[in-house]
Image (cartoon, rainbow, N blue to C red; front, side):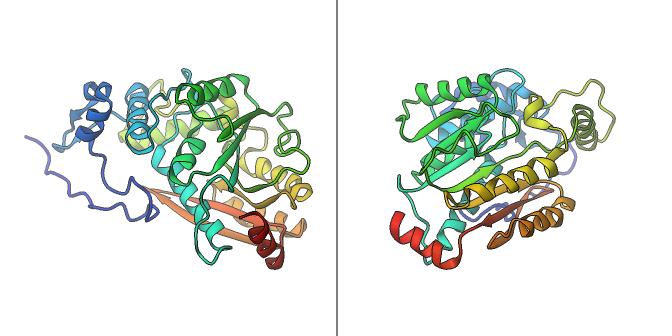
Length: 320
């Protein structure tokens, strides 16, 4: 006998109002777009159609289906072991980024190739540029310290025949720098996005993955496999999220006239006030925190600029 069927909310209200993924996945519809998904669809113990979210192949195939159906991405893949990012959450970040730009433009979101977004850590998946070019027709610069990730992202761009001027990829040769060596002199971007490595060590990342799987499975999982993958530089760095974003904040000071808005995801709530203190030290003109909700997880986007309101108005008038 099946357990009593769960009642699911019709709308995932914690996601951004413009997010295309606010309703439950229509797996049959996605399987029509990508027939490969069909073999991963099963009826769970509650009588619902689902996939095994503990199976990396199933998760990757779901991502391929979502990107193809909603964002016209015909080819998408990542090398084995690399991060397979959850598409709804990545879309949410970009929608909030669009709102931020709109707040400087009489609440009208700027679209088209006059807007350039810098994706710090574009990754092998190239997911932010793929969504952003489709949703808002922005141009993107994607940087990464990993040559294999850059090669994977470039393959995605090439196989989808995306024009070179829409998404440019640049290798960051110094892993301790974010903007230097990426932004060219006299090059201007309207906003930067970043999904920093959360953990301070490989052991911390492994422990977090173990806890997550234990909680989801309601039992201890032996030999856990990360369903969303992730190589070391995607998951951890010395000093963790706080140190990474702190360094980015202090470097951003020197590029304050070349980027209108700097942003970064912040996973750990305890880091928010500490990082706001760092922003006060470098005399950021405006500091904001945007809350994002994804299921039971709460994330935040830390936002800052070195431009005054008048300078922002001049930027909009001159560039947009």
